[in-house]
Image (cartoon, rainbow, N blue to C red):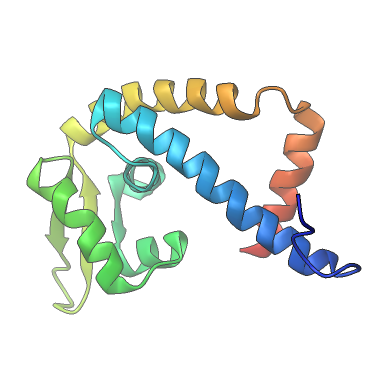
Length: 145
């Protein structure tokens, strides 16, 4: 296999490998979640974020920041989830410019079973990696965002 980055440039090598690994992992998780639950990894991430948010709701702008997306990309991501009743759109009573996304009870129910599938799929993909290495990699990734 050809070298992915110029010799000695570990930062670029890491970024390129991370990009490739993200694509491969996302594809596998998307395939499993899509087949079993009709969700993508991004959908699961949204539902999990809302589940953990106070009162099960979050400002759409905070969701965009968490996902690393633009506000319009979050709107496109939320629309199908709203249409099938997993997420609800809520206005802010004091500021019409602020909108919230809220997890519905149907969204919470689906999240519970989809998380089980996501855990199993993650184990299938990276379960062979020692836990200490996974923790170290997670710490590195946490420091980047």
